Length: 182
Image 1 (cartoon, one colour):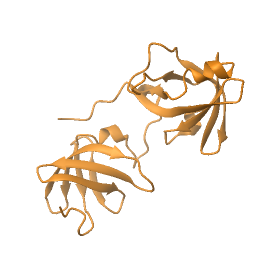
Image 2: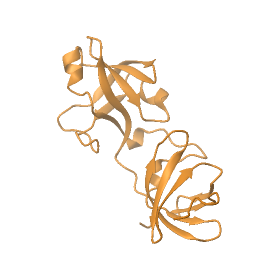
Image 3: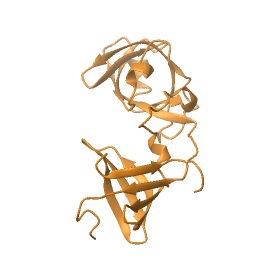
């Protein structure tokens, strides 16, 4: 992969976990770092296909009528989903937002898709491979790096990341002793 990673057409921003009540509200698990700009009245989101990879042709876009924080997510009322039966039709699907509507990352931020395929090396020049996956686990996200020496899992934390060159598709890490032992 040369150059920058291609931006996707859509970003997954939430999961329609379950219907809530009888008036069509859904409990949404937020999957975005900026829910305050996503889960607000007037925003239109797409419902994913069953695999969660693309917008579904079976469902029109859903416009948010109202949203409010609830437990660790949001209770969201969509225009046109007026009862529990209608809400149940989209339960279990992901909510997607067009990439061009996403909030730009801050100065020290990036989109995880930009990491995928990036070459990874250590501060002493050891070539580890490329970023194959980013896992959001607990307190620190985890990079799965695959290369000729095998698969490594490196926490994506400031103490280990020395350089990220998005345009050059290169990531330099300074792992703690023993982390890369196979």
